[in-house]
Image (tube, rainbow, N blue to C red):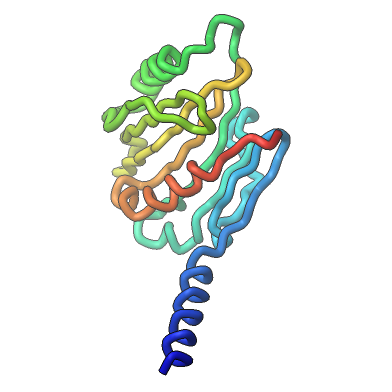
Length: 174
């Protein structure tokens, strides 16, 4: 009987680890983990984007949008080291460029012992495409780091848990 219980415990443990098959991406001074079925894309919509990880292509089957996470890095001026001011300026810029912006969340948090802002918003990108973004914004060494999870509005709730797990794995390599 003990053998059967131990075998069941081992099988359960292996199945839990099998569901948590992640890879680590390392670059420059940071690393981040992502599910192994998310792929690295070399197509960067802006030069300041450091990486883009795309969810499985099947994520676009229903809504024609492939969920993704990217990291944008922006060098700041000497006096731009306040994360609140940076987020306020970002909100103003977003509102001037995107129709139907809805600010869902804007709250202080921590990452790597640094003050950060967790900022969630959605906007209308035409043809019925409403996207939701969760951004984790923090400033270190006069540099803004902006991690962004981008999802269709209808699938945001399906991706926020894995998105948060990816965000929380981000760390600086010393």
